[in-house]
Image (tube, rainbow, N blue to C red; front, side, top):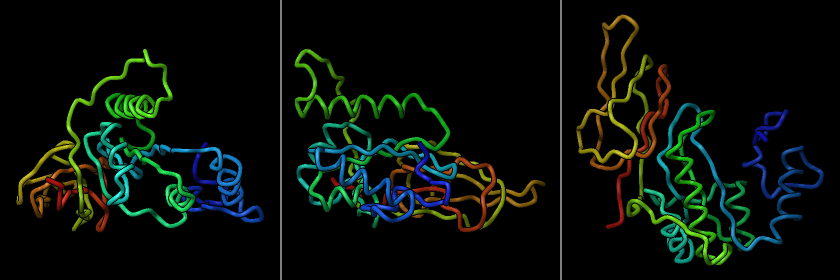
Length: 225
C-alpha cells in the first residue's frame, strides 16, 4: 500500500482523519477508531524519500523515559530526538497515549540488507523485552551502542549540478571535512561540500542530479554524552 492516495494526499499527513473526509482521511480515521484502541505500543517503519538514504535510526520525542528505554532496546545505531509532525500517525498515537518508536532507514524503492536486518532484529528485541515472544526465542544483541542525537541540521546544495558524496552514511566527520562535490557535465566547475561542524552524517542524498536548495546531508550538531 502506498501512503500517497490517488488524489495525491499523504496518509501520514491525514491523521486522526475523518469519517467523511478524503479517502486518505477516511483510512486514517479507520486506523484510529478501529485499530489503535486495541494497541498498547506501536512501531512505525519508514525509509528516506527522494533519493535520500537514512542511517538506521529510532526517532522519539525528548524527555520520555519509557521511549528512551525502548529505543535502546531496539538497538539502532542512532537515536534521534525529533518533534512529532502535525497530522502524522506518530502524533495521533501520542495524543491517544500510545507510545511509539519510529524507525527510519534506507531509501525508497531500495532494498538494503543491513537496514532490513537492523529493523527486523530491533523489532524482535522490543517484542522480546515486552514479553510478547516465547521465553526460548533468541534475540541478538545490538552490535553498537546508540549515538543519541539531540540536535541536527540539513546541508543544502548551494548549486545545481551533478552530485557525488565522498563520505559514507554513519560517518563521524570533522569541521571542514569534504563530504562531497557538485560539478557540471563538462568538468569546468567543481564545488566541494564541507562539514560546517563536527558530527555524524545520518542521511545522504544519493541522487546523481541535484538542484540548488536540495537537502544533501543531515548532520548532527549536538549529541548526548
